[in-house]
Image (cartoon, rainbow, N blue to C red; front, side, top):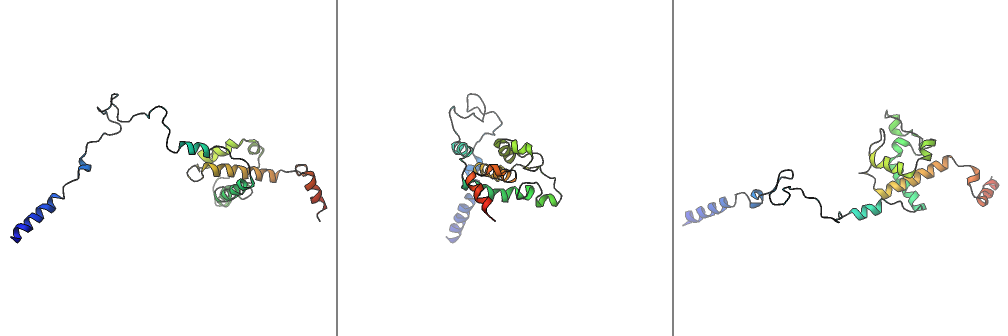
Length: 177
């Protein structure tokens, strides 16, 4: 009797070792014909009007935010993390990476870059530019805009004249020792 129970137990265990149906189910290769669909293709175009799940959020993130002190402060933080190793903390292009042999980037204070529109900086961070590689996977769109705001503040700080200071603040500065 025990031999019969042992034999049944072994048979039950052996039956459980077969491949599951998920491994053997029919499926179509993406690039091979599929008779299931009228056009014979496995890969189908999205339905007209379909919107990707996060497309709306990404579109909102890509818009230029209003200029605030908080945006510039965030840009300062992100610039120090991602940009200063090459462009240095003031944007002259003499970062620590350059001192170790990497190609020198352009100074952010050159007339060409001071006159470039904001989209130039966004594109450079997103897609890369020259020897600079793309940062799209490291810096999100809101932080890219924050970095651009900080770059503009850096450029202004290095090329400001006394006439750029409001009159009431200029008077206070002139009185200071």
